[in-house]
Image: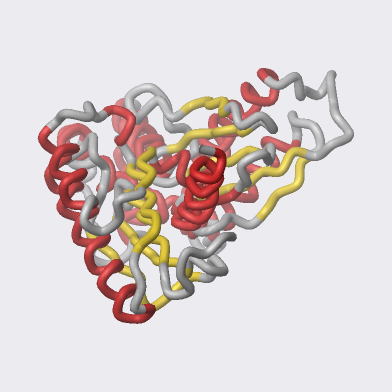
Length: 340
C-alpha cells in the first residue's frame, strides 16, 4: 500500500441495527490500531435516521481523536458502511447532517450499506467470492472477478431475512401462537418459561404467554428487541438438559430458518451457473459474517450443512473485520488518483 505519511491512518465504521463500531488502521501497513476502537448505539439509518447519525458521528469522532493521539497523523480515508444506507435520499436532513459531521474527519471517504462493507472487507478488488450475512437481518452477496456484485435476499423483515436473529425470534413466536391456537396452553407456557430463562439477564421479554402481548411485542418493538431473543432459542437447541420437546422445537426452528438462508445462497449459485448438475472444479470462497453467525456456532453448522448439500465445491473462510473495507477503498482511491 502506498504511503503519503508514515503516521497517517484510515478509519472504518460499521453501523448496524444493534450497534455502531469504528476502528482505525495505519495507512502504511494496514495494521489495526486497537486502542482507537469506539462503540456507539444502533446505526441503522432507515430505522431511526437522526439517532443513527448521532451514533455514527460519535463513534467516528472518538475513534479519530484516539487515532490522531496515537499516531500524530491525519485520516487519509474514511469508510462508512451503514444499515439502511441504500434507502436514504442524499439530500435528506439526516444525510446532510452526516456529510457535515464526517467531512472534518476526512475529505476522502466511501459510503455504502453495511452488507457491501462486509463484502469489501473480505474480498479484494478483483477477487470472486460470496458472503452470507446473518445478524439482525440477513442477505447473500456474490462478487464476480469483474467486480459485478449479485445479491439474494436482504428483503427486510416483512418479506424475508431468513436465517437471521430476527427471523428465528419471529419463528419462535409463531410457534407459540400456533400452540395457543390449538389449545395447547400448557405446552406453550412450558416453552415460554424455558425460553425466558434461556435469554441473557436484562433482555426485554414478553409480558405473558398470551396472543395479545406476543403480537404486540413483535409489531411495536424495534426489530433488535425480537432479534435479541434468538440466542435463547439457540441455547435451548444446544442444551441437553431441557425437555425433549423444547429441544426438538428449537432445533426445528433453527434448521428451517438456516435452510431458508441457504436457499437464498443457492439462487446466487444458479445465477452464476453453479449447481449440482453443473459443478465446477474451482471451489467458491464463502464467508459467514454477522453477529448471529459470529456468536452461534450451531447456526453456522446448520447453514453449512444445508448449503453444502446443494452447492458445488466450497471453501469457507474466517470472516474479516468489516471495518477493514477501508483498506480496500483507500487502495482503490489511490489507484484512481494515479490513473488521472
